Image (cartoon, rainbow, N blue to C red; front, side, top):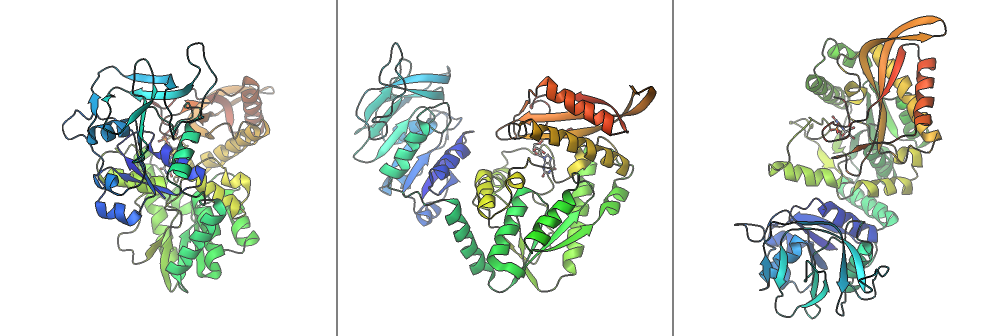
Length: 517
Ligand code: XMP
């Protein structure tokens, strides 16, 4: 296992995902994690992430001394390399000029980390690597015992190492795909230098998770809120495999789901897999409470609150339940730690985070707590869930409630469901579904005039939205082919009477958010 210490880089999670992808378990902890936690974690190696600070700023973060005393290999990336250099007696020069983007480094000495890894020669560099740089400061004086292993014209110490103590530093970012040999470099560090074994595979993760759940739960009973989303579905499949009938799922259908979604969830889990699922049809209750409300945040709050109320009422009817299972995944854990530290600002109130009833007496079961989304998906496939459901686009907790602008009514929801269904069906047919990260239709409560056949139609407008993104924090609108848009809009207007016009949303995030509300 590898310890990744976070100095605040936007790429820190990427480091961890790459290491896990290699098949080695790792965890991210803040740079100032307690010595006790480090000892308990007992890492085979430590990676210091990049970060936005300068070692010259007062109180800028430092790596805990303990990691140098553990006798395990340490790799510093970008800021991680700078603080490593400075803490071991080298020097770092401040600079207000940032080097940002693709660069070529020459490997100039024997290096355990870089030996034999080369990219295609260029006119000026035969022994080089194509890498991604993003830094201002740079190391100018090596700490004792180190040699320079790679360099560029503007950054003479682009990589350094002290093979006898197993300390390594790279000024570039091996975790981003623009560094062509980046994965190889990380692989070399964790497998060869740290001597870890690649045992973190979906089959092992499942086995491990099942054993942990059984140990935690014993013969007692577990309740799970099943939403049909990837995370709760994987939890359901996993718990069913681990504890069978001791699991009961409650599926709250708030009436704001996609077309046929509720039936699909029941078919898959209750009928095919034999999971105990209680479906609560709460559509009317949600619609009644949403009546007359057009403010986006107020709508979210109503939906979130009501969801919890319905779930609580239903679970109160069950007897002898000791545990509540949740599909919390690793990024949620890291983010809520960040929120506690006051760093992240809340843009929208996401109702599935932090919505637990305060007087809850049940203990939590969170079998995905250590996993990234891509790992959860692989686990889903390993557990036998269909590929299409495991790789489905994300769907927000408030559902169509945030995709119907203004007041929500059943009429609008029904129209939107049909339009959305046509859009997704055509995206899949054209091979574009997997190329987009999220795609859906949005209902606009404005009427527009059209002519269908010989008749004038005065009906509603829908917007199509499709985006490409890695992390959902920034997103680019998808450049769908005109022919595809034409097919979709043609079908929507012809097949759905309530719609007279289709528009395509060409806004990227930021400044526009992915959802319209
Ligand atoms: P925005 O609209 O903020 O969305 O750009 C980013 C991602 O988050 C999803 N989203 C939500 N998910 N509850 C959720 O579970 C919510 O209230 C919520 N609001 C937005 C959105 O679908 C996108 O994937």
